Image 1 (cartoon, rainbow, N blue to C red):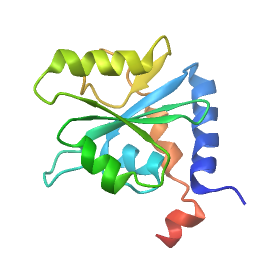
Image 2: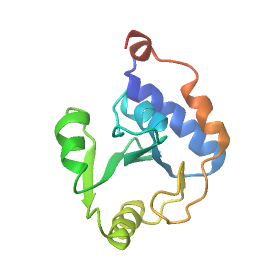
Image 3: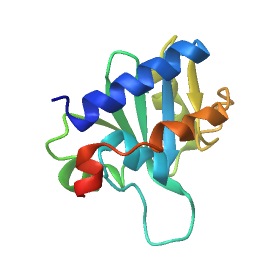
Amino acid sequence: MASEIELKTGRLGEFLDRHHLDGVLLTMRSNFAWITGGKINRIPNISPVGVASILATRDGKRICLANHIEAPRMKGEELVGTGIETIEFPWYDGAAGQKVVRDAIGGLKIAADSETFGLHLPAMPGEFTALRWELTEPEIDR
């Protein structure tokens, strides 16, 4: 039986193929939770946008991008045991954050679910939310 992450990686791969993308940058709380198996990227506020992002690619690679304040929590609490690498950037330097994200993306064609980093990446096709509609067994159990 495939794991939750394997199933989601398969769904993501099909989505990427349909939209001719190499990956997605997920910062919205719902999308971050979906791709990480229920992990949380929020702080106590009402914003639908979280404080950390996941770069998820066709090959199953997932990288967390977070500022120096949130990165230790992501590494030490939320993402422990997931195999997701965390890359940090200074919270006070938007240009440095943009550079870190640009470097992580490299030459890949990436769509984003928010404009958090100001990189003007292509917007996430609306169909992405449909990937979350069918729950996996672990999601049902959780």
